[in-house]
Image 1: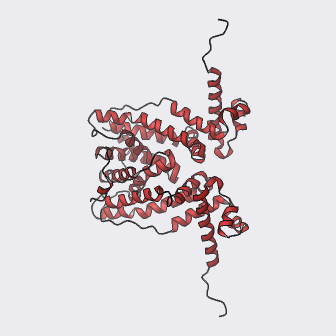
Image 2: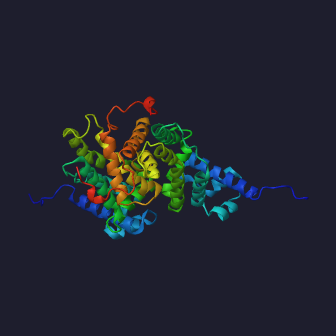
Image 3: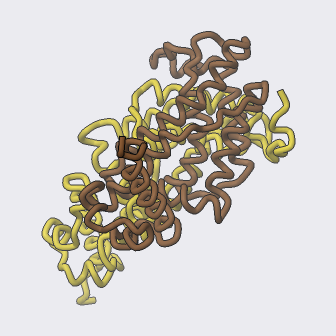
Length: 209
Length: 209
């Protein structure tokens, strides 16, 4: 009974928070090419040897930032309609990356993960977790009778987000509110037309006029 | 008249072809992390000093492979219907990347360009060139009366391709024929619903039910 009460893993959790916050801040300030374990150590106050032992290096740190993001709760929109919810989702993607201040860290994180083969698995799990959360808006729309039974809810969300991530992280084309607007309307129109009902129409029907 | 007839830039063009073909083959075989000017020199027979002088290094070579791809003519499908043409486009993306042999080089090229900040501009111009070519199928559909006047043709194509590139190069999720099928049907349903008519509906209308 002399031992003070202590949350198990308390110190370890604090070290993780400090190291991952510093990694994200370094990415936002300097980018992946300039990211070093030394800089994360200086910024976080966590010893370099600890960072290497626990994360292996910068790529391990990036992967763990993504794991932490995937674990964090995400506020699923609930506007009362699928259209409103899908627009809330694509606007959240837009504002999450567009603002020069707020957007710098998430943008740098994804760019870094795309440049780091070691972080690829963590990136996939991050997107899967977010898409599954957001898919609740589609599940509710099916329950309300707004969409056909059997609609692939995750694929509706994926389709709503894809054009934005495609511009931002693949083609590098401009990214604006019109793109966010059209992405939501596209997913809505396709979902209403039954495009996401499983099983998908077989490929041999592809070319019917 | 002693000078043999010689296409201007003939030698220079041959050097470029050899260097860029070797770059692509090295990327397909070994990937971006293992790509070196030395390996490109050995494979192409072009002297290392020439490669450095003309391209600066591996990132300059990657950027020029993309520039060359953007210049190459691309066969625009002409099936007689927008549905058929959009399916031909998404199937071309699918088969272009899916086949383990054929797909290795283009897949490695895009992954490399995403990892190379220096190649970013060339990647954007590559996608713009392809999207503008492919948009002809939408322009024809508008002319045939299949789609509303004022449809943003490039954005229809971009939307058809986005879910595939998003899976392949951002989320790392599985990539199959169903995804290619749904991507074409999604762009078609949205285009028919008038989602791509410019000017886009203003954002204040986003949340109408």
